[in-house]
Image: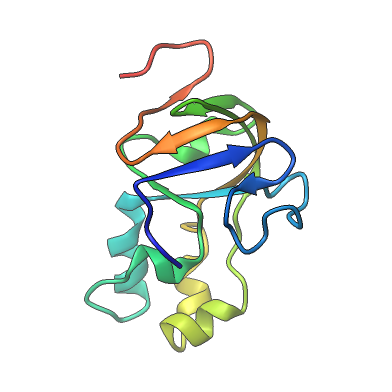
Length: 135
């Protein structure tokens, strides 16, 4: 996993350079997790902190409740996304976070989305529900 200042996002395939680009299902083209959940996950897994990259999500966002976007369209930077479901943890969390890693992620794994309009996302871009104004 690598952190980027900006990334191009393509309709139908997700983030340019992502290991699943072009192979992701239409429901899982982009994965997002809330920055605010990282300390909770770390605590539940028995760690002082956890690196966002270890959690295998595409985007880390803050200041918005991702679950409030259920069944909604939303923007991140230039990109229009559509909520497609929760991003449930996989068995790899046990290997990455240690025993209890899977359970630490339950309910805190973020969401999955499909790309409706492609464009670029840059570090610091706002996340907002489509039809409203970015804050």
